[in-house]
Image (cartoon, rainbow, N blue to C red; front, side):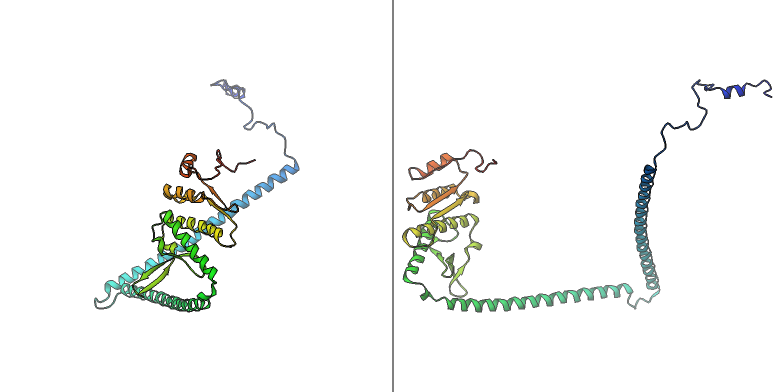
Length: 311
């Protein structure tokens, strides 16, 4: 019996009694999508398996990290306990006894001292090896010099060497070589490379020094200019194996003095044999090159932009 109540009618009504909106009769309305096929179910289950395996691997990795951290914390805890016990014993120990801290520090210092002594022994051994190598090098150098007496050069060879040395010295003067006096620059008799002879106070005589370690970068490039031009000019007076071609690629790249660069152009533009040719690739201004060369014979080929371009 409703006993005159209208609750039943209100609940059964399909609209909200307060806002009067439509109410569905089910908590979950029926889905309009169809069921998945068998292949789709298998693929979905496999994807879920992969996801759970990945989550399991991540969890295991995280668990391993936590276990390592736990072991580290446990070890730190034990170390702290041991230190605490040592401090307690140190508080009740007589003042005349040596503390554990002092003993540990002494042991560490002794270990460090032993390590340094071992390093010193190794360094001394390396020094002894270097001394032996230096003695052997000096012995072999003396034997090598004895195998190359000056009599091995013919009169023409000596004339060539003397002429080449004179040409190099003259070009060094022209190019304002200033690391050493050009007259001190000679040619080694074993490889004909430029060298410098300086007076040694200790030995009381002249010793050979490598120019590469003493000359500046700009003087190093001036020395190359002089040597290459001298080799070409030597071929004009003697029979040599020179190809007759010298190429300078951007000779001013070492920030040489512009006056020296002009001197290089002028020396290269001298009258030469028809079998000799000098090529210079430079980014200098065309007007500056023409003014520096004047009426000397040359062939200037200007390029607009890059010389090498994509096809």
